[in-house]
Length: 110
Image (cartoon, rainbow, N blue to C red; front, side, top):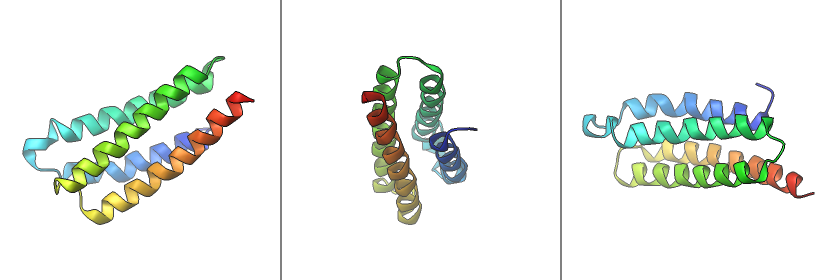
């Protein structure tokens, strides 16, 4: 993996997957599955944006998916599916990825 943002997203997935396994059985095929889908969409968009000539639209979509994952993370914690400590760590990953994405978007404007 050549991109730091992809490596950080990959690290987030490795951290989050065990936490998602601990969700209640009733949520494993709904909320946990949606969080996984969002993670994979983020990885897919990073890959596509890295290969694309015109990156702006893909980066805007990536930014929206990242925001969705932040909301899903918060909801999972508030519903009691994700312990607060894991929510904090996941939030730190998301903040770092967001900063990297912000830099990437800024570099595409120049």
